[in-house]
Each structure stands twice: as structure tokens, then as C-alpha cells.
Picture: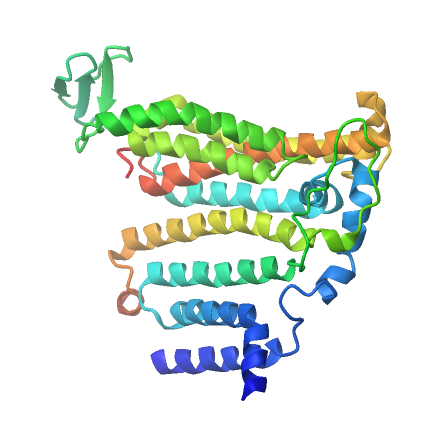
Length: 131
Length: 275
């Protein structure tokens, strides 16, 4: 039992992302309203972003900006002193691209609403079948 | 559907939890992600590019090709929103409303009539509500500082947290704040749709153009050390300057796209009242 608890506590960050991801995935699959699906997509995205950022963390390290000053030759840099910059780079672009894709999703939702006067998936499908 | 969805989600979650037991522990310096490529970036960035902010250097230099297409994705998203939603201006006559700025008197004009653009009258929508004085004044004071901060974030991305994406979003947010606090017409008067579309394309072109310039100077695409001869600096500083050029391009593209997406979505493509 203590074994189990220590495993859970040691990796609690992964548990949080998995929970968030499950919430997002469930919203995308099961929700009937298109806007709720879009919200689910964003929750999913947040889970991935948090997951990536947490990969970069190192114990006792600082942000990946090197100490520097004019006139001083830079001293030797040790990789253990700075957190991993790579996940930050990937997520920085992913956040902005996420906003852009959210915009496209909302634009599509507006078009669908203009055509069918509803955002409920089953009602839209019923209207398509009627035609 | 609900049950099937729940089963899928639970199975996926269970698989992930099972997989998570093999993952490295929280903040482990010896984790695979921190041992393969990132030590190279951390130790060599200063020597190779003279940029202290490793994130900026990796973003715009080592992974410059990736970032270029990220910018293209953002550009495409803006264009897609425009094509999906924008309703072309109809030329058919409609009832127009004008407000006299000094007195606040609203005039309704019959179909087909219009007042030529002047400082005395501003055109408003049928559902126009006067913006609150406190909000209006507060935003008027805030917006210049937000824009200044956005420029700082872009220009200072080499030495502090920041860069083109962040600064561009801040600049875009300042115009969106104008649209929210006043109305969409005010924001569009400040920054017309044509200007936004041009800026959007210019931003991506600056990025791709910097890459192409390196190609013309007999180096690889986006290898900024080729700019050393043009800028009269050593190749290492040239990489730093190349990153700045690219970041400015990204900033312009992101700024324009954010406003474009907001304008189209908030007014459903009609460019009327907005939110």
C-alpha cells in the first residue's frame, strides 16, 4: 500500500494530465453541443501543453536564459543548471497555433449555426437526413 | 454514444496510467528528454548564436524551419476565418445611423442616403450602446502602454522571456481591447481590414524572405550566418540579428492574425457592432 502511494505521489503530474486529457476526450466524443466539443478540444490541448512543460523541469535548475553581462567573457555553462528549453519552444508555438485553430473551429461553428440554426449535433444530423 | 465514449475514455486513461509508471519521475535531471539534445542547446547556444535566451535561439535558429511553418499555420488560420465568415459588402441601400460626436445626437437616414466621412459624424449601428466613460478612458490610457510593452517583448526577446509570438499576441490584444471597450467600427477605423490582411502576409514574407536571403548569399535556407557580409558583423552576431528579423516577422503576422480572427468571429463576418 505504501508502495502504491509513493508511486502515485512521485508521478502525480502525469496523473493530472491524464485526468485533464480524459475530460477533454470525453467532451469531444460524448457532448452533443459543438461549442462544448471545442471546449473539450481546448482542455485536451491544455493537458498536452502542461505535460510538455513538466517534461522540461529539472530539480535545482533555473529558467533557460543564460546569465550574461557586457564585457565579460561567458563562463562555462552546465546543462544541469538550466531547465530543458526544448519543450518550452514547442509549446510556445503550440499555444499560439492553438488560439488560431480555436478561431477556425469557432468560425466553422458560426457557419454551421447560420445554415442549420442549431449547434446540437443530433439536430444537425436530423436536418441533413431530411434533405 | 455516451456509454461508448465513456468506455473509450476510460480505456485510454487506463492505458496512459499504465504507461505513466515507466515515465521518469517529476523533475528528474537524468530524464531522457533532458539528456539527449537539450544539453547541446544549453551549452552551445551562447557560443554559436550569442543569444542568452535559449528558447528564442532554438525557436528561431535551430528550429527555424519548424517555426516558419507554425507562422504559416497561423496565417492560414486567419485566412480561413476570413473566407469562412466574411460577408462581402452589399451595395444595396440600407438605413444608416449617424451620431454627432459633440452633442451625441443620433440621426437616422433613409435608404440610399449617406453622410460623407467627417470628424463631426461617426457612423454607428442600429444596436449601438454608448461605451461606459470609465471603461473608455481606462482603455485609452492602458492601450499605449500595452503596445509599448508588446514592442519591448518582441525587441527584448533575446535577453529576457519574450519573442515574436508573445509580443505579437500582446499587440493584437491591445487592438482587440479597443474593439471591446469602444466598438468594432472604432477598431476597424484604426486598423482597416486591408491593412490587417497585408500585415498578415508581410509578416510571413519577412520570415520566408530572411530565409531566402540566406539562400541567395550562398548558405542554407535560414542559416543566418550568411548575413554577416551584409550586416558587417561576425557570423555569430549575424545569427543573433537574423533571429531578431525573423521574430519581427512572426510578431507582425501574429498581431494581424489575432485581430483578423477576432474581427471576423465577433461580428460573424459583418463587421458591425461586434461583441
